[in-house]
Amino acid sequence: MSAIAGLVPETASLSPHLASEGKAAPLAMRRVDGARWDAVVADFDGVCQEQLHGFAAIRWPGVGLEPNLFEKDGRIVGGALIMVQKLPLGLGHIALAKWAPMLADADAPDGAAIYAGMIDALVAEYAEGRGMMVSILPHASPAPVNAEYRALRARGFKRGFALTYPHRYLVNLRLSDEAQRKSFQQTWRRQLNKAEKSDLVFEHAGRERLGEFKALYEAMTDRKQFPDHSAYDTLDALMAMDEKLRPELFFVRHEGIVVAGALIFKAGDRAVYLYGATNEKALPLRAGYFMHWHIIRWLRDHTSASWYDLGGTDGFQGLHQFKKGMVGEEGKVHPVPPVANYAAHPLAFALGTAAFTAREVVNVLKRGIDLLRPDKAKPDQARPELDAYLK
Image 1 (tube, rainbow, N blue to C red):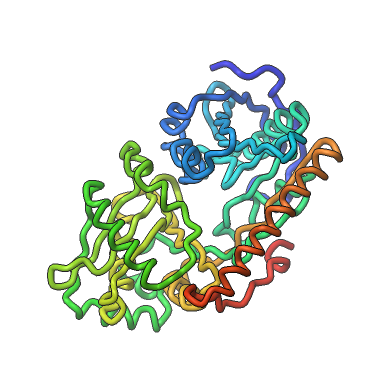
Image 2: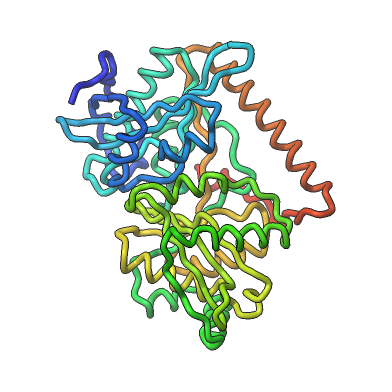
């Protein structure tokens, strides 16, 4: 496999907070097309839907997508789908990576060096070679310290904007039934016990029933009036993917009628709760507790994932309580770090920062409009403090 000329990075010191110490691994980087990219990264431990070309092409249609694979000694060790965003007035471009770069093997003994090597290669290509600001948003980490964010800061990346409600809720999937139930908070476990007395039935469904889920989801959003900023319009593309990357669909029935459903991304080391839906009968039946309990067990028994990522809360305290109770004693509640930005030239950094600031102003205005609308549910969760976690 050939490397792109000039993309073998120089070595750089790693942060001492990383799980393994050393220097950045010299890596070869090569660009591939979208179909090849999705096929290769399907086997990565770090794969996620945001890094799939088939997803990103629909979710962010106005950006250029550049899938980059990284190789060490002829072996693929990682990758990063970079979104190249034009700046207004033709002033330049920003290179964006969400939940990337990804490791092929999360347990590789040289994983820290590979991660640093991927960052070096991206800096060499996009910041130094093409004059862009490189912006990377790492995943929330189950570890006490977010090693990826620390590595970025050690490499010279600057702290950028943070998500308004950054915490993510991670359920430990490698527990027995007994240990998992013991992990749940007492209130959550009590609600599950009640749900199991309600004659509910759990179903694992095929993609041919996606329309049934859509009807349930759309009826729920109309009823609850939650602002929906999700990637719901990508569902058809996701469900058309190969089996490894295709989300799994689950339903809960009561007396023959579907009362709850969920779509779960199952590939890699982190399964992700993408979408859930319930009808008005689900709450008194506690169908959500029943459904997630069985999803946890299904993921444990049918995938290699270590964690079940429940996502965030969008600022709703009720969601926080529900998810925190499910995470329990053996799971983790950790924040997504701020975006990390790097530019080789001051002008590129200034233009990129100005573009992010303008986008944040727009987002603040949108959130303000949502707060003013009487028909929309209002966030009621206190905004968390990030600094203590990131030190």
